[in-house]
Length: 105
Image (cartoon, rainbow, N blue to C red; front, side):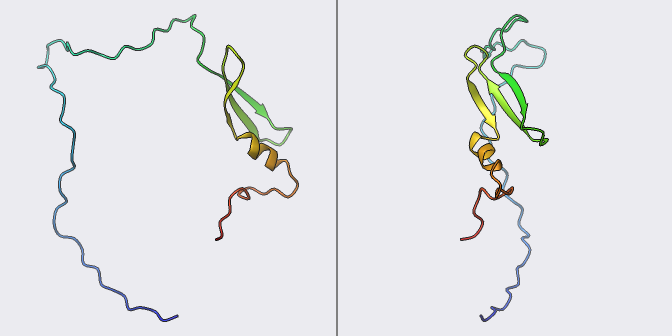
């Protein structure tokens, strides 16, 4: 395979254009109240139930863990890391970390 000659690259000497920004909202003068409508945060009290519950399970005595976010009402798993498929693969004898993806074409 023939090598192509290197091309000299000159540094850029022109200043970069200023970044484009969205127009700023008009703020009230300093010391005056801000009468603009504000988004309302959900009302939570100390007695409010949590949105999800975190459960951490060790996989055997391997030092590896599964992290699950559960719906506190139904007990349904909302998110699990690592996913179930990866946990099942990791239990195979011929599994190696990184073997889930193919890195060659």
